[in-house]
Image 1 (cartoon, rainbow, N blue to C red):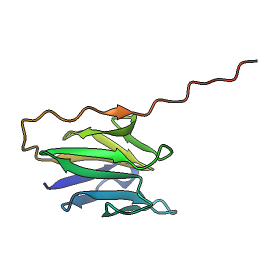
Image 2: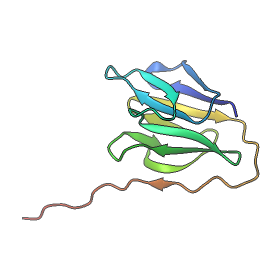
Image 3: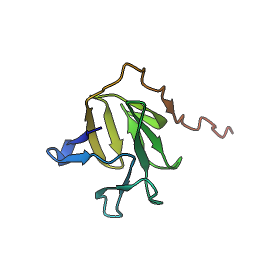
Image 4: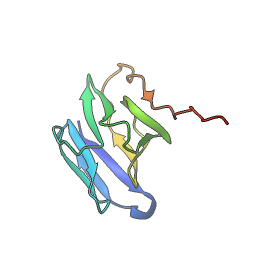
Length: 117
């Protein structure tokens, strides 16, 4: 599966090619975008293929990974979705080659516990 992440925003114009899935996505201390083998311990999320669908899974509850402006834990990625990893924003592009429905997404919910006086 050939996946492209098109950067939008201040880094508009950069294209990241993800041809060898699964792939781990991380950022450096300086905020640079990095991809590598899925076993990376510093990864913010992993993108993989599942029965012709593209899926994402975050690696920690504290990492900033957002799918369509929602904090994602895991789920399916569709062509045209917006993905934010750290300060990097992307539009997801790939040719979907299955009629299988995309896996449902599970989003992180904010902690609604508020101390009351």
